[in-house]
Amino acid sequence: MGLFSFIKEAGAKVFGKKEEKRQAPDPQIAKHIEEEQKVEKSKLESLRDQVVALNIPIENMNLSFGQSVTVTGKTQTNAEREKIILAIGNVEGVSIVEDKIEVVQAEQEAQFYTVKKGDSLSKIAGEFYDNVKAYPIIFEANQPMLKDPSLIYPGQVLRIPAQ
Image (cartoon, rainbow, N blue to C red; front, top):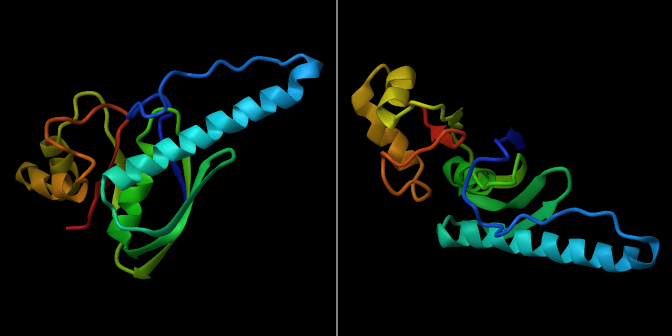
């Protein structure tokens, strides 16, 4: 459990158009607050849909916005927990994920790595495992978020499991 940082401008675009923030005149403050709450609810639903679409098992998932996106629930493994954190954090507009997910079967946690320009899974595997041919370990550790080993982008955060 803890806080995980992401690059707010990088990631999947699941929130639709960016909302413009504006100062509401005094008579319209209540309406403005109501509109902001609708936008927040819509964003939370989009994040929930992102996790559900990836079929990552979690019981009683709950998401909330504050200065970060807080996720609670219960998973069987750290791998499932880490994938949920990455599924939420690798969304454009999310910069911090606060993890409050309970794990039933504790296991060694993976490292997180932020992709840089010029990176490939084989290059990353070479850095972490001293073997560029070990890239399938990283690819498999990041499925179902990754669909193809060559489709990674700068700013994306990946799981790097212990070998």
